[in-house]
Length: 63
Image (cartoon, rainbow, N blue to C red; front, side, top):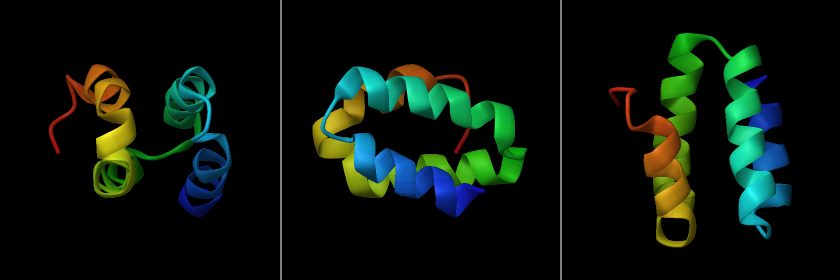
């Protein structure tokens, strides 16, 4: 499921609001360790362009 969410997020990266909504939806399906892996992947791949969204969503999750 994590790989699927990465694929979807790659496809939605052009639209910040859709990107944000999809990250939030990911929390419904992913296990806690997968959420941490997703956070790490997002920071590596999208922090320059979507850092504000990543910080907002993951502000209470230790990574």
